[in-house]
Amino acid sequence: MRDSEKIDKAIGRAEAIESGHSADVTDPKALRSALGRFATGVTVVTATQADGTPVGITANSFASVSLDPPLVLWSAARSSMRHAHFTAAPAFSVHILGADQTDLAMHFTKNGSRFDGLDYQLNAEGVPILAGAIARFECATDVMHEGGDHTIIIGRVLRFTATTGAPMLFCDGAFGQFTKGP
Ligand SMILES: Cc1cc2nc3c(=O)[nH]c(=O)nc-3n(C[C@H](O)[C@H](O)[C@H](O)COP(=O)(O)O)c2cc1C
Image (cartoon, rainbow, N blue to C red; front, side):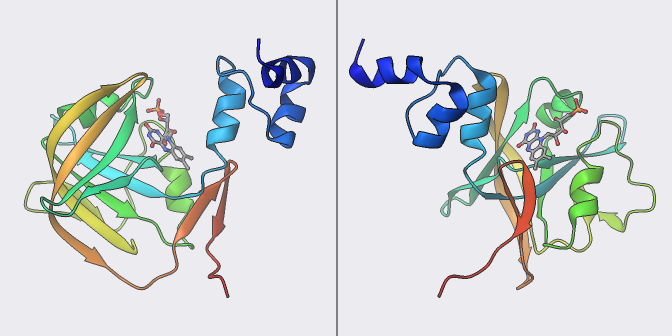
């Protein structure tokens, strides 16, 4: 056992994280907490279920992949009741949320989140497009990869919009806002 590992064993998880020593990788709580140190934006991904019902989910796993061809990705948790709908959908749309859209972010964390009362319309692919996002990427599902307890869904961007609105951020399990540096 390396010295650093001995130190890690000797001190508690919280202390290990606090001091920057490596924590136990088999401890999902500690791993989740460490991953949560990575600040991200927040998106709502939408699609249409086979029966025509719109479906949406709050996701911060969104990332750009390629400019040419234009590809983006997000990861759907296998544990989610909505996983089957998104992995079966031929198209989806990613809405980058603005700083003032916390309610929408919270709304789509719940399974069975309905679109009743929300301002949306269907695009050419039949995907629900929500009003108010600071950017939107309408995609055709390109390819999917198994990623442990998630499925990585890569989409080809068919069209997009962008505004200059302030983005919502997510870090350490909390929503916040972006402040530009000096
Ligand atoms: C800020 C934030 C980011 C999230 N990111 C993802 C994500 O990238 N992928 C995912 O499958 N679930 C993500 N979730 C969880 C889902 O929104 C949802 O709550 C969870 O999958 C439970 O789904 P279910 O009710 O369909 O089982 C995120 C939740 C929050 C609050």
